[in-house]
Image (cartoon, rainbow, N blue to C red; front, side, top):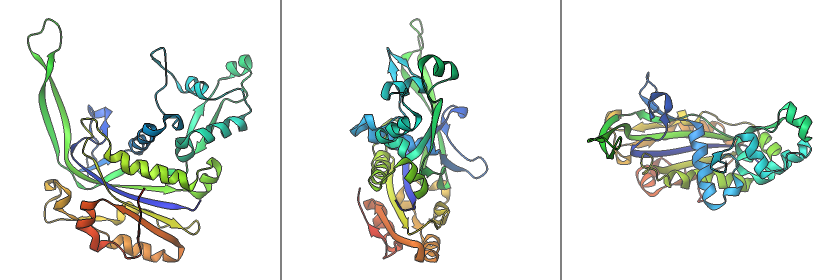
Length: 305
């Protein structure tokens, strides 16, 4: 496994990519800058959900139920592995079964001291540092938020004459940059393979497009750059090396056709690290490539997942 960096650009119209529970599930916004934000947890959930469509058994972090009751993590682990093995055997079994643990790591409680004595369990828990990590995703421009009010189909109670009301906030439009890294050293510990990385990145691409809930439908993967390095040196901070060029004010932007992406700083930075780079691969959707193809570097290799 070689060290890699990932730059993923994606957008959406009239959507809420990541609600903030502390703000009545409104989109996450940096109050100082007006920049929209999406957590790494949301990005990883998109990947997990997409992989689960093909094989749910390969994902550990998901909802487990028994008799309609949602299980805690300790109980969930006991549903899928033998927890009375030696710690090293538990680690091997978890890593062999679950691609999300190989990729993202996790802290997995298994037992407390009383259970260890009574049930002969030999470890309290295990922890893995995930080789694939993502930063908080941020929009490349200030965003406009629209507050919407509407009525529901039903009354709030059996004896009510009026229908319920709903209120929600949406982003009119946002183009996001997501930065990620694949650490070669952690990958050795979790046995993350090159094939695993392809599955993860493919799920990020297709999973973004396949989000079909009412608030997230319409998100589009636009561009992904994957840089593979020869050794431990890497450029870093790639998400801050791209910018938007538009004749419109930030909050007036409403579609991918309202701007182009300036890759000049990114290309300059990668040129500085050229001797350390093994290859640079990219994937682009049709509309993004039509608008920005002249900005692509001739050394970038086009791929598909």
